[in-house]
Length: 381
Image (cartoon, rainbow, N blue to C red; front, top):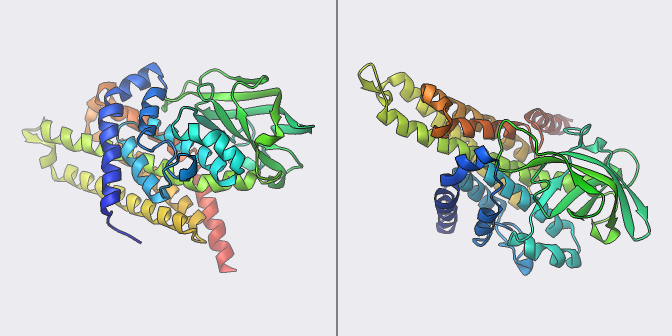
């Protein structure tokens, strides 16, 4: 376990911080207001190796670690958590193709995914299957060399603005053993998209339902064997939980930095805000919680890189703790700004709105507790 970054990791983090400061942060408020999906900027990020962070090199990936990814996504999120989060989702879905796809599939899709010439959405959640992912109902029926898909996915990030969909579908009976994974061209006849959802935050990426109506997808687009889909989905979510935690910490760090700067300038009762001991203590607690969450994230990322037996539990722990801390730190930063924190031009309220959903997606924080509790109970037997 490491508690200090090596020289290469510092360079990597600083590169992502510089990109966030120059290419993302100046536009984040406008993207949020206009609901703009900044694909062009994400493709610029991909030129730095961020489109395929932990994808193997033979298909254009950067072959970095989950630890490296955590550093990158936290840094990018200081500019805009929403943009960083979508890049993390793109990486997660691309990794599923890299990890579970055939050599033909990997070379078919990943070179363009790594450059983000193609971008991809991850399709698991359905109107009646959120936390209970094994209950999904989207059906894929074999018809010769194709599957015929019918059903609906819900809350799909990037849907309608992406080229590919990595979708979990039911090819067999009930339960997790009946689920398979298909890579679907977004322009396939029978694939359609709902309206862009009106959301509390995450406005710089579209969120839509995806509908399948007799959509024909080649059997050759299935990742691994039939019935492996639930395993693929869960394997992807371990890393996805780390990524979204990193995005929470990056957003919270940006909010903390804004609060520190504001407290040096704002005066009340004849003193600067940072001269009041009560507010100093609040600032200190925010920094302590953030550093604790970051240390936890690093531990979980290192465990996932090592394929530690407890990696899934540690990822769930880090996600529960880190996303709760991220939201609370951002919310305290808003409070320290007083009424100005509630105004959009200061950028704090956007961070609070963006980070709130991190406690829900990639498995709600209640589900994270369930994962941890089950592991603890199993270990006690």
